[in-house]
Image 1 (cartoon, rainbow, N blue to C red):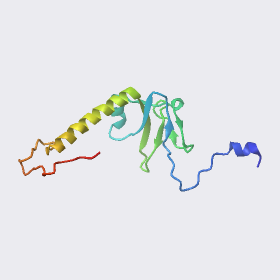
Image 2: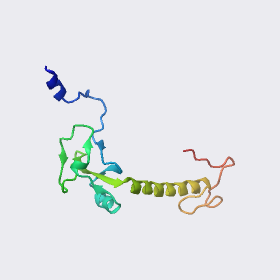
Image 3: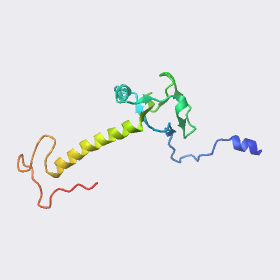
Image 4: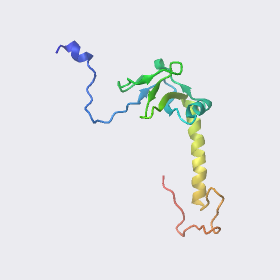
Length: 142
């Protein structure tokens, strides 16, 4: 086989080796996420600041993209389940993504603080409703 034919061949990936079939390289300054098109999740993502990624704005890391679809104005989608469920590639600016992570972390910290005090989300406190804090206290290790 000539050198040109070898160069034109796809890189060989042994069968059974894990591959990230949905991995993409997106635009700088944005975070990508695949969103399944079920239960209004795509619409909720749009309301949350995400946008559909267009074909020219992303590159698949795995060449196995045969079932890529373009049925939302050129947006990238892929069938991800045997029942025909589609996932759409969506992006959000890094600054909005980071702000969302701070908000999620704040809520998690509040829950962990309540647990450390022996409280729960229903307002239960130590000494009521059979709740108590052991002598050694409550410790949560991250």
